[in-house]
Image 1 (cartoon, rainbow, N blue to C red):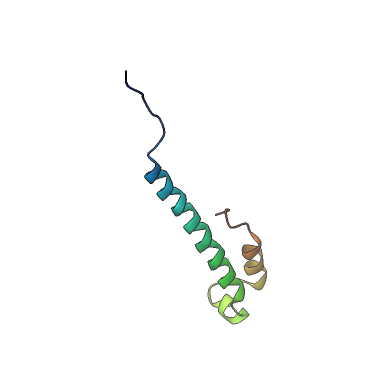
Image 2: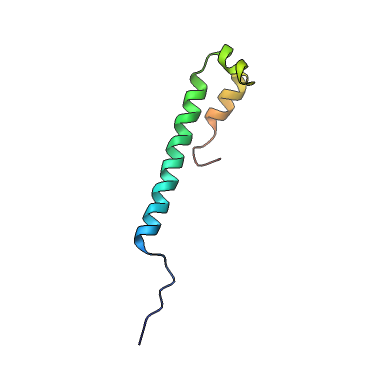
Length: 63
């Protein structure tokens, strides 16, 4: 008798979980870096200080 497993192998799910965590960390760092830019640099990329603060306040899991 054989057993049918519907779950993914541990290595694939671990890799997927790592990818999610890496994306969250990168998103958090990027938003923090954006918030540290001065107003002149923000204007160069078409953003205001309010835009940067709003982006920084978003949760890291939110794209």
